[in-house]
Image (cartoon, one colour):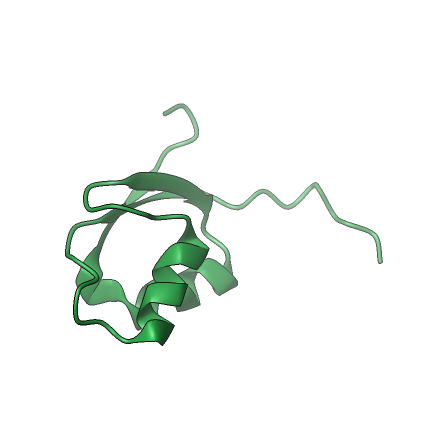
Amino acid sequence: MAVNNETDFPLIKIKLVRSLIGRTQKQRAIVKGLGLRKINSEVIREKRPEILGMIAKVNFLLECKDMEVGQ
């Protein structure tokens, strides 16, 4: 299957703002899958449906901002 590089997704900055203590293993796995480790750690990801679904599952732990192309 060929990858279509012409479709560029906008970027989103994701920050972990609440602790994972007392959270379920599934919630911890989702946060780890996003690439977050400690409180106040940030990652920049493409705004893809897979990422948005992960964010929706643990949105109470995260803070998200849309990024512009130049940032």
